[in-house]
Image 1 (tube, rainbow, N blue to C red):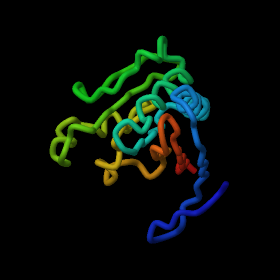
Image 2: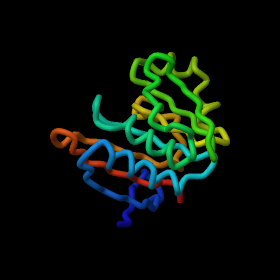
Image 3: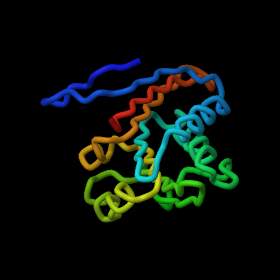
Length: 157
């Protein structure tokens, strides 16, 4: 479905997909399908509660980008950033433990965001002010058990 998101000035066209996944495998498959549309330099901003599927979705993106053993992709909560080689290399950032913008700026995060790789950012709402306008935003909601609502907005146009 196509919609418009107002930004205070001219509206920005978006492609929005809303889906329900019923298992971790389906969430991973949704990430894999998105990966087929990604190009070097793209940023995927993930948000949602703890355990809502962000890392599982990232495993699917890794698989779609040709990362070897994508199931070994895990949340870089304590190391903050992981790099994976694939058809298109992947940066995976997890900002869960960072509480203020100064900690985030000390990581030189813009070097990862504005790179020639695909960059996936968990807890991206923490850096909303420095995310590129042209990005893919994915929001996760826990429905019950393994069921997730996944809202994907493609703002790259």
